[in-house]
Image (tube, rainbow, N blue to C red; front, top):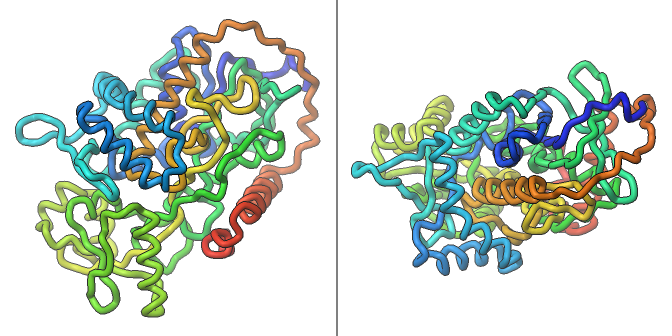
Amino acid sequence: MKKEEFIKTDTVIVGSGVAGLFAALCLPENNKILVITKENLDECDSFLAQGGVCVLKSFDDFTCYFEDTMKAGHYENNPEAVKVMIESSPDIIKTLVELGVEFDVGENGSFDYTREGAHRQKRILHHKDETGKEITATLLSIAMQRENITIVTKTTMVDLIEKNNECYGIVCEDEYGEKGAILARDIILATGGIGGLFKNSTNYPHITGDSFALSLKHGIELQDMNYIQIHPTTLYSKKGGMRFLISESVRGEGAILLNENGERFTDELQPRDVVTNAIVEEMKKFGVDHVYLTLPNMTSEEAKLRFPNIFEACMEEGYDITKDKVPVTPAQHYMMGGVKTDINGRTSMKHLFAVGETACNGVHGKNRLASNSLLESLVFAKRAADVIANDKEAKSEDIDPIDLDSYPSREEILKEFKALIMEDIKKKDGEFYAKWCNDEN
């Protein structure tokens, strides 16, 4: 395939979650953008984010918010990235509201802030228990109306086009098995995390860390690939595969954890890794594979209003979360590591950017603070878009022809990707691998 046959655009974005969509909307409208996504538009993890999005309510809360984020991350965070994220949050929320995102308000019409694990203050905005869906759907509806943005579904990135550590585009495969190449001035990776590689995960099964595997293949720097968050409370099921998340905001509103004897065994508002470890210890103690969650301080009507999605999911399994003990178990949830970037989304390869869960700028450290993920995705997606918009440097198109027939099937490629990623995690943290990864799909 010669370069004359490539699809050409200004920016190609791989992934249609919050980070990818917000980056597209923050780019100038004269920038021709192609967004590809692996499955349907509503099948991205951003749609699943229940809890909310953090915001700096006033300067008085900066020190507390900063410390909460650092402490949750075991002080392995990049302080500069944390500072940028927190300071940018009011403008980001203002932009979302202007775009039409609706956050829950109290009786007086002001924002209804909630609190989650490891937060000492109420600083989380929410839209019932489907905040990610509200934000993502709003961004998507706007992106689909923009003439400069084209979105293509059911298309998988299978390779990067690069020469001398400069990225020129991607090779992809559509749902019919047809491969093609997209040439772009700038490439943004927004493919999410790696949940699809695990037996039990809150992620969609097609979220398989493709950007990480290609980084390993092309010598792009990765960071903290073994920093993978296990969420403490997912709805227990004997079936494998995707787990239904019971948001930390439920515990923020008063839900408690109980063991087999009906005893409360931990402070539910500690950081996620601490709560997860406490649950694992209780399961070992009683020789079981779950504990229980209940929300005794709310009526059914109150819980249905505040957490409609979670309340309904539990009821479908036969549990009223306000009256019954709902069985819950930990499951893989979020990737703190990923493609190493600076605070503007730049990777170690020229003209290649990474945003959202795919990127690792160090903001989360070893363990992500609840409801920082949507904010982090939005803040640094905008910063990457701003860098791209302001880059006026000429870029060569001196690339070699591509033999599309040399690529194996999508199934073989994804199998290779998984092996590369899991081997890298095992190499970096054998203990974590043995505990959580040795029963991966």
